[in-house]
Image 1 (cartoon, helix red, strand yellow):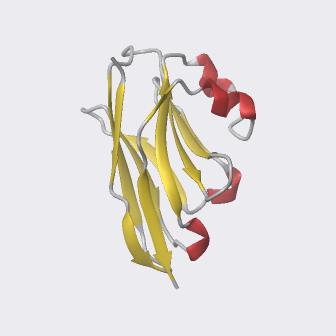
Image 2 (cartoon, rainbow, N blue to C red; image 1 turned 90 degrees about the horizontal axis):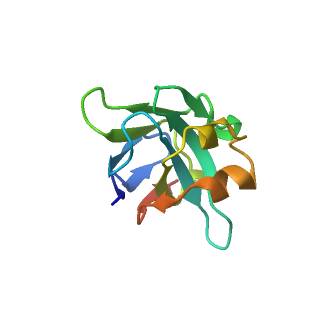
Length: 130
């Protein structure tokens, strides 16, 4: 059974940083794709970053230079480091996964990538004040 548990959300001021964590379990050790999404009220979930089981990562262009993703070297924990936050980053942030490395080859901006995610966490709220 695949489980994803996000943590690390909260409230910070503009210019601040947050690091989100996603503990995941139940995925095959060498064949998975995990990703970070966020969702604004009334909008579809937006992919932010992805990580393949072999360690390859990609961060979506809108947040490149401010957000990075990585995996703990010893544990199945995915991180999203977010820097220079603004009120426009206020959203619910989700971790997602699929037991397929192929999905990680899809364009992160595409509906195909989003719809390819099979498992979702419950999300963590990030609130940035001005």
